[in-house]
Amino acid sequence: MPSNIPETTPGGHERPPRIDLKLTDMKQLFNSMDPSPFNDKDLDHDAEEFIVSWAHEYGPDDPLSLSIYLEQWPDEDPTELIREAIHNYFAYRAKLNQLEFRRLMKQGRTTLIIGLLFLAACLLTSKMLLARETGAWVFLLQEGLTIAGWVAMWRPMQLYLYDWWPVRQEGRIYEKLSKMPIEVIQKGKELIMPHGNKFS
Image (cartoon, rainbow, N blue to C red; front, side, top):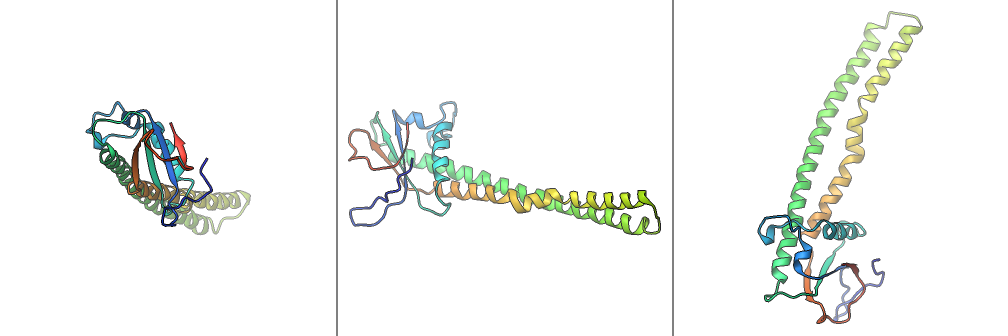
C-alpha cells in the first residue's frame, strides 16, 4: 500500500511519491526473451504492471519517483544504464500510445461521417418518401428509420465521449514515467527504507 505520510528532504521539502522495487539482480527487471541491446530492452511484464498500476494511483501530472534495490550488485554501477533503459521503454510506450490515440481519432471521424450520412438518409426517406403514405405500417417504418439513423450515431458518440480519454490518460502516465527520477541502490547499503510501494 502507498504511504499517506509525505516524505521530506533534509531541507524540509516534500519529496514526490515513490515506488520501491526490491530485486535480486538487474536482469530481473527486463524481459529475458528480448534480444535488443540492454538500454532498449522491454521491461519484465510483472515489473511494468507493478510500476504502471501504482502510477495510476496518482494523478497524471503528480510527480513520481522510482527506487530500485538490488541484492546482487554488478562490477560497475548500473544506475545510468537502468535509468536510460527504463526511460527509453516508457518513452517508447508513450509514442505507441500517441499512435493509438491518433488512430482512435481517425476512426472517430470516419464513423462520424458514416453515421451522419446514414442518419440523413434515414430521415430523408422517412420524411419525403413516406410523407404522403398513411397507415400503421408507414408509421412503424418511419419510426424504425428514425431509430436506425440515431443508432448509427452510437459508435462515434462512444468514441468522442468515452473511449478517447482513458487512452490519453494512459499516454500522460507513460510520459511521466519516461522522465521520472530513478535511483538504484545496493541492498544492504541503503539507509532506513522509508515508506513506499514495494515489488519483489
